[in-house]
Structure formats: C-alpha cells, structure tokens
Length: 288
Image 1 (tube, rainbow, N blue to C red):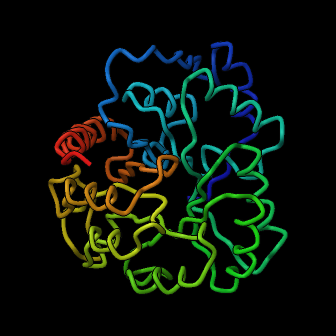
Image 2 (spheres, rainbow, N blue to C red; image 1 turned 90 degrees about the vertical axis):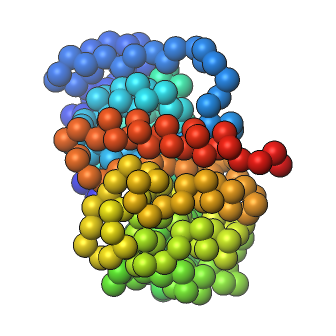
C-alpha cells in the first residue's frame, strides 16, 4: 500500500476543479449533487479507504466514491502521495472541494526513529487538512509521536494488521497507547481483528475514547488466510459495533472507512451492499 502517486497523474488533475477532462482517459469528475434527502448515516462519517479502489486511477476512484453517495475518503498513498508538493496538495484540495469530498484520514503510514521523516508526514497532513493518520508506528517512534501530535493537533491511529503483524491483537495496541498522548489511539481494522480470532466489538469497548478510526471489513473465516465478504455476512456484528462506537464517544471528525480488499477489479457492487448494511445498523440504534 505504498505505491506513490505519479506526478503525471497530478498534472492531469490540475484542472479538475473546473471539471475539465482528467488524465489520459478523458474522464470528468462530476460535481456533487445537492443533498436530496436526510443523511442516511445519521451523522456517522462513513467513507471509503481508497485502497479498495486501488485498480482505478484517482479520477475514477473519486467518481466511484461520489457515485456511492459518500462524502468522505481515506486516501492510501497510491492515490495521494505524502511527498506531494505544496502545489499538488492545493490541486487536490480544489478537486475535493468541487466534489464535496472530505479527507477523513490518510494511511497506512509507517513511523520510525527518523524524526525528520516523521515530521514530513505531519507537515503533509497539516497542509492537506488531514485530522487522522492511520499508522504502523515502530516502537522507537512513540516518544517523537507524542511531541508531533501535540504540536500539530493531528491524531495517530494505530492500525492492526492481523496475525503475526507488529499489532496483531488487542493487547499489542492497548500496550502501545498506554500512557501516551491523548491523540495517539487506534484504527481498528475489523477484518484483521477477526483474522486474529478476536472480537472487534470488544476492541472498541476496551480502547474506548482511543478509537479514532475504523476500517470496516468482514471476512469469510476467522483465520489468517481468508477473504473479505459483505459486512454482516461473515463474522462482524455490525449493529453491535456501531453501538459500541457510540458508547465510546467516537469523534465526529474520526474516520469510518469501508475497506473492501476482495474483487479489486470491480468492488463497487459489494461496497454498495456494505453501505446498505451500515444504513440499517445506524437506523436501528436506540435513541441516545
């Protein structure tokens, strides 16, 4: 998930804010239509992790997100390179403003003991208006991250990657955030939690206000090797997850991103089905 965004792609997007042809395909980014109905997600910041659309260039990926009726995107580096110049960041901002899309998060990004590299990622996030950085921080990066989140007022959301990863279980994430700055918390990838044969709802209850981001994902089997399925058709208890998030005080400027890694050539139908499940779950939540 670290493919850089080619400069030629950004050059092709430079005039997107005026809805001129984009890239070499001649695709045009449609202006978002005015809201025609009440928010079906009841204020939850539902979006897509753009890694779900990794087989599509940026213009097509954004059009798909618009077509899904969503207002949020979590970019992976292949769609928005952290090494982008100031001009490229401004171009992206213009594109997203025209499309009425908000960046909810960016990642998954690595952090190490390299203080200069860590700072550059925060500077990129600040310039791009990114509140949440989903991350895989090395243990020796945390002292510096404590300083950076305080300076930039940007959250670090530790992303679990499942069995045998640095953050493979609840204990590893809970230990990493213990005693750290209040802006260092978690991005709970529900699919990877299930692959570790743990319970995503229990994760949210345990980590509570440290949960700043979610990768909404379900899997066919609770084991290391499996594949993604539509939310609620595998092992994820979607209504219970949203109830736990509400009880934990999930922030309105957090990131709730569907990440559907199966069927990368044509994930849209499956993502649409996931959205139906989410709408039903939030609609059935008891009154606060």
